[in-house]
Amino acid sequence: MKVVILEDAEAVAKYGAAIFVKQIQKKPSSVLGLATGSTPVALYNELIKKYQSNQLSFSQVKSFNLDEYLGISGDHPQSYRHFMNEKLFKHIDINKKNTAVPSGDAKHPLDACEEYEQMIKNSGGIDVQLLGIGRNGHIGFNEPSSSLGSRTRVKTLTQETIDDNARFFAENESQPHLSITMGIGTILEAKQVVLLATGENKAQAIVDTVQGYITAQCPASALQFHANAVIIIDEAAASLLKNREFFRHIERENQKLEKSLGL
Image (cartoon, rainbow, N blue to C red; front, side, top):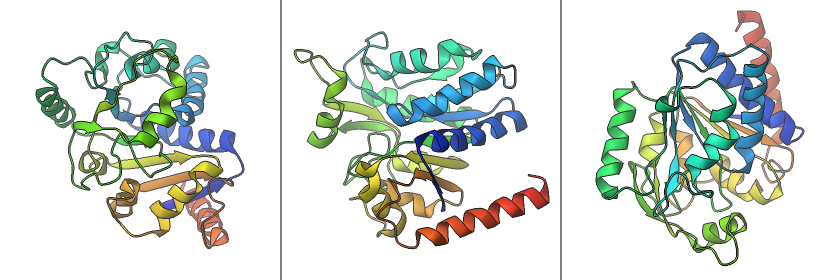
């Protein structure tokens, strides 16, 4: 697990975006795993800038989103499909047919979960998976107690997650309590995982992820098993980590090595 500590949220977004840019430039037909939430938006803005300046094309890219609320359609303003269209897809040259988001209004949700897994496999697997992290350590909608080997499935949201997301819904608007989410086992099969976290409210989750026990009580801790996971955080999110200078030292040495190898 590589831990990169940067000054602020802007630096986190730029560092994370650079990983995706490099991946797409190396493999124009890359398969990307994408996430919603406030933290990924800044990264998407960086990718949009690269496209608008003719430095990047998404014309051959395929994408799979982590999750979706169950019980709402893709044109609902609070759906994650709508979020992705507004925050990224409509601003770049990606083919909408190549963008997959779990079907929140599926008539047979369990079948839809199996179909989503098969779609990922048929695409050759995810090259780079983007993640945010919840205050309780959830990734996607894999809440505490989720199996570390789980696959795409229907999940009940914790009250904490419901409360955290309530700000996106009007006071009198019905808020879903169920979701379809990639499983932790699905996420771990991505060739590379990039997790972004900013702010003091994520500091304990980052400690539990990076330096805690591997446990279903902190789903993100499963990333300790991944051979190519990058945790990119700002100073505030890193504030509770032990040996912060050690992580900074490793990153400086990695940068020197990559430069010497021309990577």
